[in-house]
Image (tube, rainbow, N blue to C red; front, top):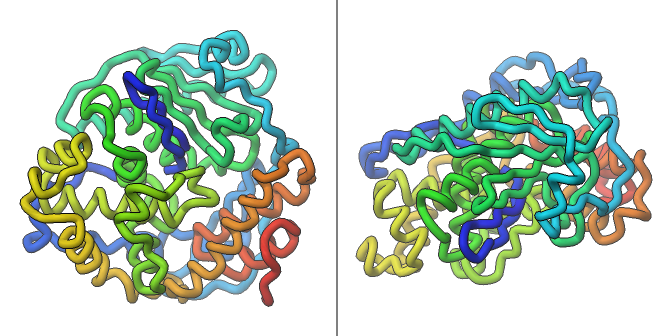
Amino acid sequence: MRGLVTLVSIVGVVVIMIGVFAILPREQRPPANPVAEIATKSAVARETTSPSTGAVQGTTPAGAVAPVSLPQLPAVNKPQLVSPISPLGLVEQYYSETQTFGAVTVAWRPGAFDPAIASSVAEMAQRGIGNVSAFLNIHDDSPLTVFLADEMFDENCRGCQGFAASDLHQIFILQDGSVAADEMQGLITHEVAHVIAGNHIGLPNSLFFAEGFATYQMDADVQAAGYVPAIQAAAWAYQAGILPTLAFLRDEATYEGRVRRRLEYDAAGSFSQFLIEKYGLEAYTELYRTRVPEQVLGVDWQQLEEQWHAYLEPLAGNIVNGVDGASWWNVAQNVAAGFGALYDAPDKVSVESYAALTAARLALYRLDLPNAIRFANESNLAPKTAT
């Protein structure tokens, strides 16, 4: 996902949601354990699928490892980089079919979607606005336009599932069949968070903070839909020894879309959650703008990194539905590599390969590693893995 923040339109990459947390020091409030929610809501290797998205659905007892099922492949459009998100001045001509619900307008390319979907998209946007505004203790009733893209974003946002232009109060959501219906709320919340942060917190000092805040805000929606939240994925990365350093996240990470850079997004999101819960929202928003922790918090980046690792430690050893962190990230990195190959040359990728890679991602995010491996192999885009 990319966020164009106000004034200089800083670009950040989406993908991805948290409810309102009490702002208390970590000594008083340990990180919320996401395991119970995932174990009961995750659709790991379910027996039925959504006919429209291929998102796996059903019920599996908490802590159980379900047998491998055969989910339906999602109906995706041919991958190609054609959507005119740049220059932004052309988008209203391109996405010219619109419906407005209060402060939210939903727009799409004529004939691309059934107009009946507009009201549910607007409701998700309104919910995201309400949740992020409540978290920041502000009121935001500014107009927002949600553009639904039925084709991949162009090379200026390669790898994005979403995109935000906060100064224009616009967000773009990829709807080419590769985003499951139950992912939409989190994705919209992520992009809405970029817009609200750009207008109420200010310019972020780096993409690390821009994407970290947006990913943190979406985490509750991710978890509610049965997907692995950022905080758990980051803790697993810490256990597996692959968690990026703060120096890398601040200065080198590219945030080129969460489908292929999830490690960067989830690390950034978990760090934002840690900072807010330990030091409070006011201190966090100051650091969001200034990048000098010694002045704001009285500690340096090295001390913050040590505190962050200690914050993740209680979740690092979690085994969820039979899946541990090392196993999950091993598959996750293969799937991410597949998306890297896809975005390197999308015009050469078939619909079938794109659908299989999408199915692999959805299975992975729902902790269904057998199907994630199977579909990643079938995509012929990800490195082959033994099943």
